Image (tube, rainbow, N blue to C red; front, top):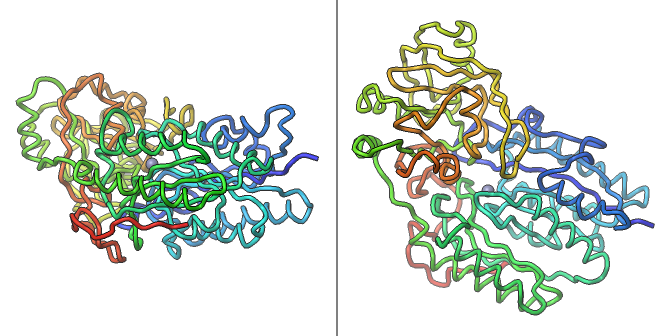
Length: 501
Ligand SMILES: [Zn+2]
């Protein structure tokens, strides 16, 4: 008799401060697969699951539930979440009634939120647990930007997170999650789990796991513990700080083989170490005009990082805050900026290549952060907005900006997309006919991946202090939940680390 493993995913990172609501269509546009289509997945976290579980003679049979992935955005609508949850639970319930359910394995992000649930994954895991009972193992894999909650720790047997940022190890993490299922079912692992949380709310600018930075050091410290006796797995977290949920923080999660005290102690040690890194996690920032003036004195292309409008962090990607200064100070220096604006893109498609027209652009989808700008534009290129990711968690997958246009406004090439898309290595630009190496200023709207995308053409990166739902510093975000005491507001906190188990 094989072991039957219910497999599914709900992968989206949400933003409480802005972004476009994440509805069912947002998932359908990115990934929404069931049955044979789900089972055919070769890449990503689920590809990793199947590599382990579908080996000949491994003795597992997959029960497909639902694989749902969307680009980060605003809150998941209640309608979309309830539909997805119901679909996953119905498939698990049907398998259970047929006597074909031995474990549940889910690929989750960890920082999703719906209109009604600020801890979406905690709610989903609690629902799964209440359906399958305590005796059926439930394992979930997560992004290292997860917001780990008591419900998540309580209702999963094992949580395992990605180890890399920029994220490159979705598949490997999937394999580790599947291995955990295998080890529990074989009796080799009796998991005891704990999460240590330190109240640090910082953007991801200094959050790489490559090299020697503060989060890299935290990850390496956590990973060294994996060699210890009875330690099954360790994960380090830099929480996605753009949720507005109580008691958020980063730190470490430890799974041991049956030793709760050890899990508690090691999780606390990782969180203490992470807390000690807090000052190095806050980035150095530049004002817009200051950065452009400095950039003009620099030879070669300059990357201006407007992380406050990061689609990969849930923002709408529709900011034009830099445009007036780029036109005014940059004169006719060639620059490129991505802007999500469905209506402006549609107007360009109606007008055609070569048309000159007046356009109202920007701040249309999430108008809280600025006002649209009226510009004289020339349409240089029109595309269907499709491109292929080359690497990362979506390697080989198609990205879809929807109808897209490149317009020239003074010296600035404005890339207009209809929908936000995650930025990995700048794949959007070649698809639009843009050669970034020919630009003086490249506006990057992400806190990390710009390094990979533009390192071949630029040595000069400046992170901007701009307004938006994914800013470089969290200092000015209007949190309403009990997030304090926490860094960066409270630089010293008595007993900062909290343990959940
Ligand atoms: Zn992440």
